[in-house]
Image 1 (tube, rainbow, N blue to C red):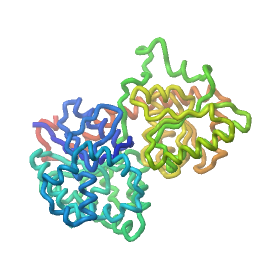
Image 2: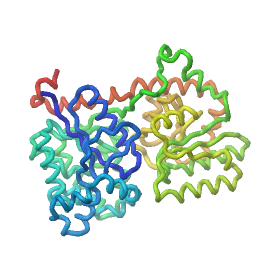
Image 3: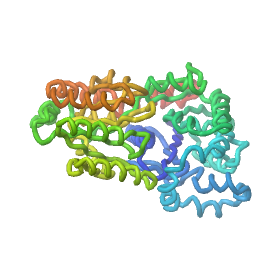
Image 4: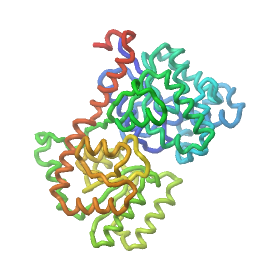
Length: 449
């Protein structure tokens, strides 16, 4: 008998998100190592640029959860009625438009889910418990703090430890207006006592949640995020004798190319990067700007406005939005850049795209807040600038344009560190170590070996 894990993952409504990519990769790596892991989607099916290893059934289906919040009669409808709204195809279709829903519209539902057995979604919780009883896991991994209302009921019903992944919840929860924000924070602090361990993707966020949400510090475990390194150029030159990051990153071929790879939205700061780039162009510095990432229906006007300003300056021919590339296309896109920058306005908890860029041998220029200082200092793969300063961002780009040797050093250091510190196997072993520690003497005998 081996340790059996029920890993819950919150779908992001049809868009790529760092948490889904991380959770799917973690589950896939553990499964590939022979571990018994079931990846169970909540709200909507997940979207990933790798093979999706989640089960087909979605729990807490987003449509049903919303209907149960808004129309009390749906809190008592039978399963055959709810199953119509839980169809994956319908959840995917609706999720594409629901993904852009503002947090201030979801305050009541967030509090309700956090209320667990006392919330409007009690029926969904009961069905999840029944499903997990049949699965008989030895440990349950919750997706984020917003699902802590399920922690105590799951522990009591299944008699197993419960851990919770941390996923940058502060950005969403801070945007909820009171009284729902205060109620959510109070419930999170109360329910945290029912969780055996919290898995933090960065040391920055580990410290932040202790202060921000009153999570017990002794229950936080740092588990580095990791990516599958297949397809990326290896630091081991014996595997690629004809090519290396050192050869490629000098930037002697083609125009200097600045890149952006993240969701296209104001929070991620594409407009700030575009302004810094145009500042360089107005100063006589020639460079191209290439952009890739998920673009939701609600943010199309945002991108259109950026493109309009770029065209008005006369630089439209040197700007390119390549859409949402697949995995191979993502790696090729990152390798085409001289430098990547995602000047997020908020303090990012993860910065998944930083790891991906460094793994591709492309250095980064990031604002000095959130997880970025930690990632840059740990890898030596980029530069930091004061957050919110367009001129400082432009100056950092200009510096790298003029210093190919420095750019080469940053690329090589970041590339090696990303492969050493942020591979999926490192993430998987760190996670499994936490699982074993919280299961303790109740862990199945074969899992300990």
